[in-house]
Image (cartoon, rainbow, N blue to C red; front, side):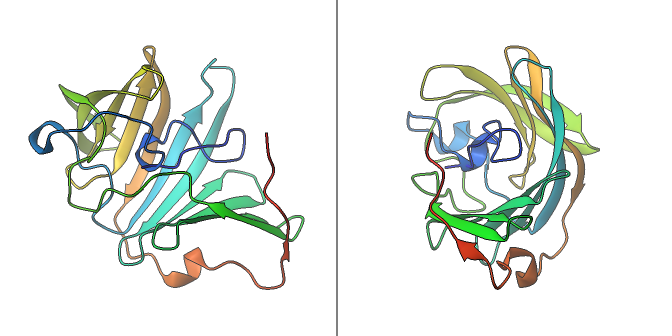
Length: 196
């Protein structure tokens, strides 16, 4: 269901919750809550799979509108995902451009509900960014395992793949996120999304 996924200043594959990369049905008692049930502002440190690049990325979430905003550090580009509209808008303020495309997921697990897809195995608990979380092992569509740590209210705090932490929350704030955070600036030129 999650964001999943552009690298180096774009969406982060490691933020599994919004990419929906898992494939098998999950049992309610055997799966984490993977969508925040409170407005949230999280600063993540994201490490490339090879470990040679580290960046910070801010994620803000608004429960009432089911919208997410991702801001890579030191980049004029940010992304807004609207699940009700099923859209991902990439805004490049430096070039004064926007691209709108379908959101990169099949659906959103509602806040306060356990993951509706995927297989999860509970591994234990941890503390990340001063927050308690439960560690879960899950697999992506290609069968690669990831260990993810979610708070009881659905905030992703950490992702590890192959024993390497690729996403880690540095700060977590449960504060109201105003609509203005998710507004696309006026006067941008629309361009077609980039294709691989």
